[in-house]
Image (cartoon, rainbow, N blue to C red; front, side, top):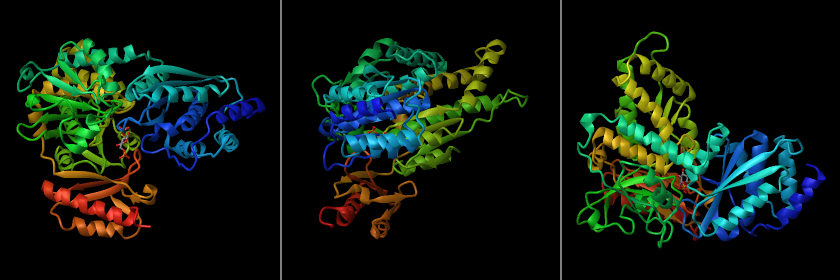
Length: 559
Ligand code: G16
């Protein structure tokens, strides 16, 4: 890098000294920590994002959010040109740059990195980074730090898109790089027109079968509730009541998808009066979605309809459309496409959901936790449906298949408009426009759930009856150093520390259909424990005894 650029970096990074004695790591979904220590990290990520833009000659995204974490935390992550997560190859650079102890070391690492990656810092190309943030109070000053980072790269521009859901920012980055219109209004337009189109394609016989039209959405006191308030005005035909939309309550406190899914109780401001109504919960930045119904006389307990069930619902719907196409198959060239449909889950997927999906005849594959892994795997199929049990997921369509669908749709529009085959083709095409192709998106997911339930004529209870979850329990344990835990086989086996897996196996063996695994969280400073068994009591006991093992091997008394 030339001297001018070097001295700009030295001078600007000196204004953002890193916190002492803290090691940050680009985890499951970017950097996350207490917001008070993130200024320098976010500034440095801003620089890195501008360099990524130079390297890829595309628009890059930076989102300031800590999603489901408590309100005092914040975080930052980069969206790549496709709108997906930053390529994992760059994560070690993020770690190295974020942890450089002072501006001299930082600029030295930056220099090496620019050379190694061959980034055209001295050419004539410009860079652009789109910035978004959620509603956290710390977001504004962190966004300013990111902006200063971006703008310290010569010829780099920061475009502040304001307060957004995380998936909106990812969608906008993807749209910009595809040369499409990419404002918030364009996002709402695309989703609402696709929703209306799918509603128009609902078979007459399904209308009002078992379906109750009312829907109540818990907005987690975050950006998702706020956006849904605006968006719902464009959604004729969908009756939504929004609670916890951010006025008054605290972000993610006793509300939101993470709370509802982990605690399996109603969020604040829901209760016995809501029995029988279909309810949904978004998380703090609206990239997760779960549904639930309030149980009567049950002390705030709920029937949880989690990401696994959303995946199953979508799988049934898509499979139905594909079989309509197959029934009309004409082996003549171009009239038939053998689309590969696959589903992707993680170890958190309830065992009953995996059994159900396999029983449907679907190919089910597993990856470690984190959308970045699931998304990559799902992209290998013509239609790849991925969901984590926590409600994070989407449906990806391959370019080849979309191109074939477009062609077929044009053909059928002139030869057999309105036929079953034509409708199925259209539905698949429109689903690909409704559901976010960049990343899991609670708002687009919610619209697809709503239209699919109407298509099936199903109530939330009928949907929940697709299969019965095995009872499960999740716990988190604070430890000395969570990086001391290393896992393998998509997080189902512990490799380090030695001995703990054998001890876990001995606990599992005590329970019928017992299953349990532990993994270090990538977003919080804890070890997570997941246990499953045939009764709730057994799942609770298994989780508890394994949590004790974690404490014994890795806890504060273990050293
Ligand atoms: C992020 C990731 C998700 C992951 C979750 C939990 O979600 O995007 O893929 O499941 O973290 O991660 P961990 O168990 O490692 O803490 P979010 O909604 O917090 O962005």
